Amino acid sequence: MKNQVRSKRSAGFAVLAAGLLSISLAAYAGLVAGSKAPDFSAQASLGGKVFSFSLAEALKQGPVVLYFYPAAFTSGCTVEAHEFAEATDKFKALGATVIGVSHDDIETLNKFSVSECRSKFAVAADPDLSIAKSYDATAWFMPGHSDRTSFVIAPDGTVLYSYSALSPDAHVKNTMDALQQWKAKQAKPAS
Image (cartoon, rainbow, N blue to C red; front, side):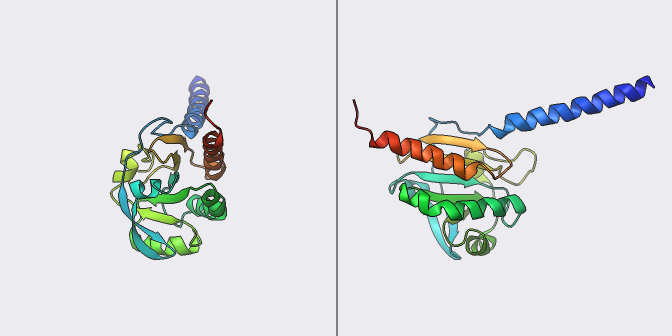
């Protein structure tokens, strides 16, 4: 009887600990605001057409919304791609480029960029996770994949905002809000 009670308490504690860990990880992102964003170049696909994406070149045009996702054609990543596709015109109106990055090969991303990204924004291949590692955006719980982490990067290469959460629900809203706040500060005259 005592062992059963002890076992139930242990199981309850494990559930509580797992819940607290997931809550704390939801707000965690590798690079924090103010960090210098690591530069990278990668094969990318937009509308099924392969090109070389360069962060440095994209930043010359304005801010970049960079988001890492675990794998193309999985449920959460598909939802997130649809949401970014729907918001792409709003991001462009703010002068921002959106780029998604995953471990998938370029052939898979060619298909994903058309069907799930709706040919609205590019997705880049990071098969060895070198980009994700440089952003500290690898999934500790899923080796070989990146975590679901979003960044807003200013044209000077500074991380303005970072957010990690397994749920795709808040990534578009949060990055849009961060970008709008940054844009508003840029519009105010210096005092």
